[in-house]
Length: 323
Image 1 (tube, rainbow, N blue to C red):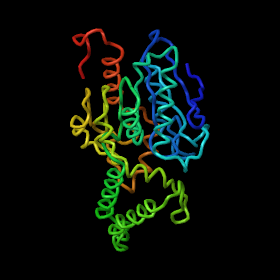
Image 2: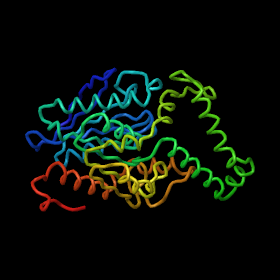
Image 3: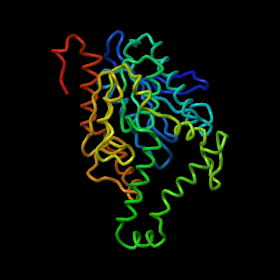
Image 4: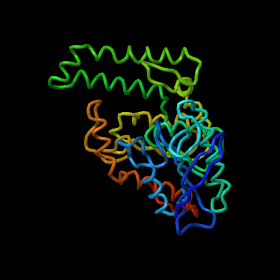
């Protein structure tokens, strides 16, 4: 059963609460935090791009008996507020309000509220876990990495794509020296944002959420990971070009709690199955192709076993399924 709900943060956020037909009297609940951009509660970015990931996650969680909540970000879809003027810490405040909403529900065990963050939601979830007592933390496609590091890696991959591009397109881009301009243009943009003091500025006549980017660039997620005391599950696709699966192995150095981490083969950033690693030339086409696909089956298996072990089947360690 799905219910439309209102989460009262500094602005009113609209969300969907999913309640399984069969559940414990007071059971665990998962809050789904979306990634970067104007993504709504279901994973829709605009009329053309709809990855459906958050709706699919909600449906999967409901199918295994887990209450869950997903919501439209501030200033997106049905939620109130100004999206462009929203900063990182506004997003953390909104997620905290959503957690407290879940804790207040009679159907939910307040000690078993789990945050699941995807992409930027992983950073928001990590920041939240350092400030609010959680039952568990799930980081999908973005664990343990600062936004500045993720953006730098994406620029490096784009530069490699230009250098290795075949045919006339590659020849023309290299002739223009585009591979040498990627980093310079990015630094010029960053400098303009960092030197500003407004929430929103114009860069090349396009409005930019400067407050959000400034706060992200100054935020070190590893400092908050060191404060996490709840069980943590981190999963990134081995073919993810937006988040780095290689950093997962560093998590036990920061997190003092129980940590499980996995790099899933043939999984990209939208958490769907793919045989090919995207390039800067194929990313949009690949997102369209993956949109209608279900969640990667290995991801579903890892989520279910971890949730069962930590929040459902808690009778004794000997009886738990081992991942």
